[in-house]
Image (cartoon, rainbow, N blue to C red; front, side):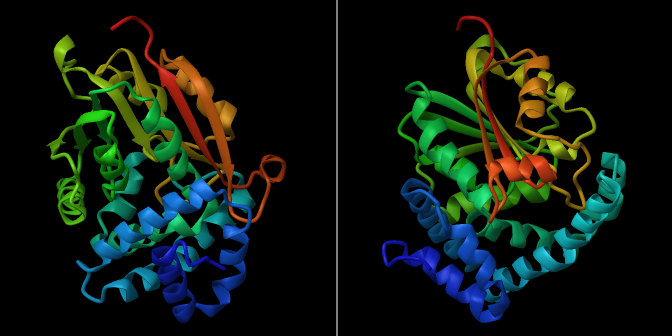
Length: 314
C-alpha cells in the first residue's frame, strides 16, 4: 500500500492495520491517486507524529486506538445525525464547550485521533500538502507568521522550517493547547522559537504597523464558531496590508464540536470575501474514496482551502 520511499508513513499504516484490520479497504482507497508531493509531505508529517507518540503513555498504541475511537465513536454518530437532519447537532460554542471541551478524557482521545487523520484521510492530507508545498513557498522572504488555534502544532512546525519565515507566533484561548504546541515544537526541534500567547482573537488590540504579520493561518477553526465573518475580521487586524491569509475549513463535515455548516468551497470563499479579503486561490479536497463532483452532489465532506490577500499596500 505504501512504498519503501515512505517508511514512517508505512509504519503508521502497519500499526493501524494491526489494531484494526477491517480498515484496510478504507486506507487503500485513501492513498489511491495521491500525488507524489502529497505523499512526501505525509511522510514528513508521519515522522513528526511518531516523534510525538513517544510522549504518550502507551505510545503509538494509544494513537491507533484513539484513531479508531474517532472514526467509530465520534465521527460516525455525527454523520448519521447529519444524514438524517441535514444539519450539525450543536449550534453554539457554549454547547460545544459544555458537552465536548469540558470532557478532558474525551478531548484527549479526539485530538489523538485527529493527529492520525492528517495522513490517513485524503482530504486532510491533501490540504496539509497544499499548505506545505503551495502556501508557504509563496510567502515573501523574512515573513512574520501567525497561526490562530495551532492545535497539535504541526502546521506551525512546518512554517518554522520554511526558509521564507523569520518569526512564528501562535494564539489560542486554551492553556492546554498552548502547552501542547510548545511541547510539539520542542520535541520536533523546530528551526524557530515560537511566541505563543493565550489570546482571544476577538479581544486582541490591533497591533502597531511594525508588529503586524505577513502571514495568518486559521486552519479548522471557523467551523467551531457561530460567526466566521466576525472572526476573520477580528483576526485580520493582526495582518499587514498586502499580507496573506490561509483558511482551511471542512464543508459538510459533521463532528461533535462543529457548529457552523459550510456547504462547499464557494461558500467558504464568499465568507472570506465578506470579511474584507481578496481571494486569490480556492482549493477543494474531497474525502477519501470519492470525487469532488460526487461530494458536491451528495453533500460529502470536503476540505476547503482559501488563500486570500488583505487589501492595501504594506
